[in-house]
Length: 453
Image 1 (cartoon, helix red, strand yellow):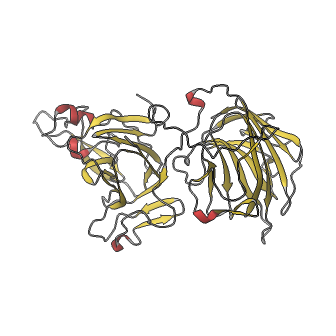
Image 2 (cartoon, helix red, strand yellow):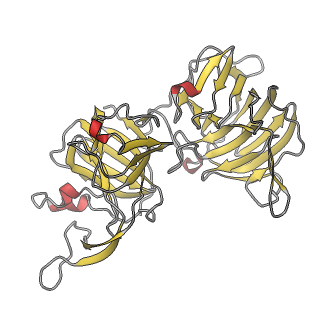
Image 3 (cartoon, helix red, strand yellow):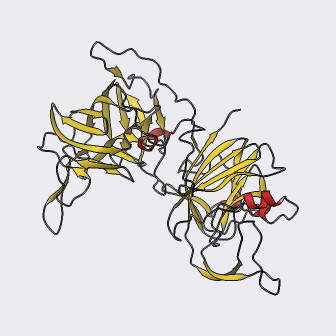
């Protein structure tokens, strides 16, 4: 089965370059201008999570999320200083610097992204309860997260892909620490306050974004600068997800950007990083529609069913889109465990709905076109999934939907299930909707990128 290719190749647009700043004699240039967050992108935080004060980038630590650079980096030396502010409960202060990170959060994980994390942490030394061995520290750990991979310079006590520092050099709450991160050819070395203490190698990705993490405590960053090193031409499989041009459709706080009918209140609601629907909207139109119309676009949407299963008889769908028949000419039916039904309406139309359901054919089909017998055979076959790529009920799925003209491609969990299918008569523009079907479902990581002709 064809694996996910876009948006890594054909539809990748030019990266947004930060305002040009000349490097100094040492080859370094500022990544932060000391005045505002030019050159940085809010990904999954609130605008007030990050601010600028006294030549510092300041994070409140909440809500948890990250702020990334507006372009990718491959080989470089990064230097910055950080200072965790004391907290009344004296618990650990947590933050981090992501290296070679994806441009949007990990599927089904609304806080962080795939990449290599350089820990920015104070007041923590974690010991495994069984062995008593130290497994995490606040002195410069480096580790891979959410699907990234790396090999630590020293074997971890529990064989985690995490390098513990060779010595403790980081200062505590209210004190400034200096980090020097050297990243080259998939190798990362970290110097804490002037001495190298940790490292990892064989990293994948090895080209991507740099990001600062908000994770519960007020932290200050200053003197952020970078020196780029020559490229070693990573393979496409070693490059992070391109975040250029993607805009968030859900701000984690409210339904701003959606047509929030009073009948939706308490039914379509933000819960942490999820958009939770209980299946019981009281609005006249129970679907949740975007306030904005879209023409050509790519859409990312994470989803999972949260309800209990019920037995249901459903028809067997053939690759042609037709229903398989019994000897008596009636539809052949099979019993399934049905956890729910939903979907995404494209360009204002219920007919152009990309399905999310539990039928054996799998999610991604366009029911309105497949069932329309006036449509040509190639259209009905084209909107029928090539494969069931759904995760098990209760697990998160990530769907990419690309709509250009009247052509639709759907990639579900990395597998292309609908490829360049034609939707004759589909509108050229219109809003997007998350479908009400009477079943509870969670959505997350809703991002859209408009494609300009």
